[in-house]
Amino acid sequence: MRSPRVLLRPSTILLPLTAWAGMLVGPAAAQPPADRGGERVARLPPVEFNLEEDVFANEPISDLDPEAAVPRQRPTATFGAAAPFSIGGFWAPAVDVDGQADQLAMNAQFARVAVPIGVPAEGRPLWIAIAKFGRLELATDAVLPDSGQAIPGQLWLVETGFMHIRPLAGGGSLGGTFLFGSASDRPYAAGRDLTLMTVGFYNRPAANARDEWSYSLFYSPTSQLPYPLPGIAYVWRPNDRFEAKIGVPPSLEYRPTDDWTFTANYFPLVNFNATARRRLADTLSLLAFYRSDTEIYFLADRVKDDQRFYVFDQRAAVGLEQALGRGFTLEATAAYLFDRTLFQGMSFTSGRTDVVNFDDGLGLSLQVLWRR
Image (tube, rainbow, N blue to C red; front, side, top):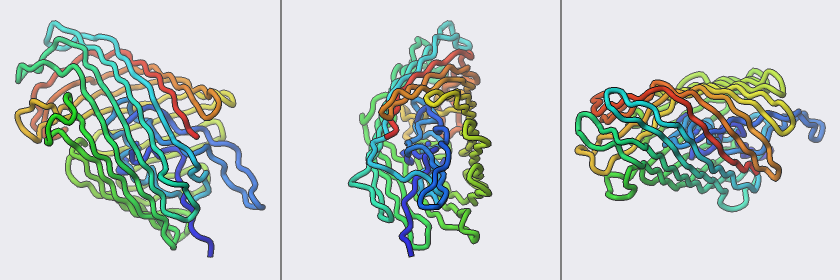
């Protein structure tokens, strides 16, 4: 009996660093299948760590979904001796703030890396060290209307941790992710400003050995639902071009041709992402997406320990991704940002105070990725 292979899904794996398991890149287009010893194998791109959901997100959807980063049972590229890496920035020009004679502009910088600890081996447990950094600047003289405090000028996210994947004899997998750090306007200023993200997951083959059952448990105090959240889903794969995760959290991936890819995923409460990608040439792809983004921080001077500061918007974007060689890729996107708001609250849905709405506007992002 062959040992189960540790297979990592190329399209959505930033580790649980993107739904249970922050920043702006879609799955690479699939390559034509290849023959391997008489067996037809789908040849997908090298494993990437998905930074897709936001250039400064605390927990983009691919981070929150353990299914996005666990071993895959269908043929895919195995994790190689790579150090997936992304660095880039985001800029949104000044727009008017509702009810105040001020404007607000935004810019952000981020870096993110995931490195295997030791040499990955087929059928053996895999450990991955992960780290991410983000800085979000809110350039404005506007104030939070209820407390009268100035809107924080800079918000920081610094996290480090690891992910573990353990293949099981029956073809399933077991593992988890743990990230620890600070998300605040003054990172590590006090113990109450510290945060974590932890995920446990278990996958087992379905009766047909083609599909899977996925079980998970997620917790992070800087999520829209800051308490432990269980997940259960059936992963349906009728063929090599379609996959639907039916349950909680749900997701969809469809490749009608080698040049087109469509993905969608959702994580409670309002984290949703839908992306379409068209390969224009061997090294150039066009992408378009809709996404809702929520950034959550602990302000150092907050009155209550459980109070959180939220930065929310929705965005529709188009962009280009250009391969630079040696595994490097440059991605540039332009987005229309709307439904933009800042507020404080105990959770995303209750006890909102200091609500600041600001006008719709343009957002530009640029990042460089290394996928091998």
